[in-house]
Image 1 (cartoon, rainbow, N blue to C red):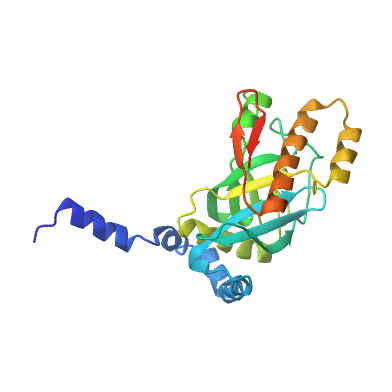
Image 2: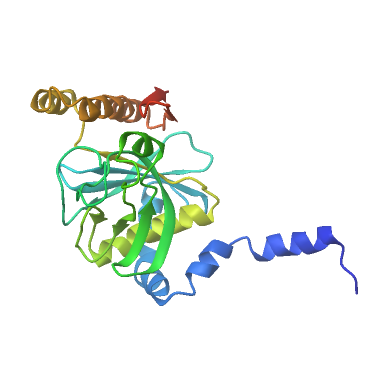
Length: 247
């Protein structure tokens, strides 16, 4: 029997509609995470009027305060809802962006998840696309470093670590969103929760460090817009390493 190319491609598309999740389930740690966490995840989403098969997610991390917020919405929704907060259990570096390899800094700025590692040395890990376009302009050329993750095992040299129990859950939320077709899972890393008071404290502490203060002012715009609207603004990376924020 002969199949036309169109039929073959259609069959391939149908059989691989959940190909990302299927590939991930080949790994024992992912299967273990589903066994332990799937029912709880579904119940938590239902309590927020969210459907796992429609889920899209957004992560906000705060270095001071050591937490990661998981926000989610259904594909057809306009606004995100806070699903859960996770405690970052170790920290390294100080407030401010990462500018070179070995500085022990956790990056700050606008990122996205670019890797899912089901066999990580730190149980499970979600890769962050550091260095981003801004980092490549403002960081130390040729010595930017990389391999920044949200991961388990509660150890760090510039990453955002949580416990193994927490990474199982957070990994699956992101996995489901990716499997639903969410190409870009955004991650915004803030120095702290940027209330007017907190930003004022930061600006007074680093009055002549324009690299930090310019970034924090841009992050503040996004922080306020998202808190007001629960919608993600558009972030444009500029040629000077700065950002333009559009509601």
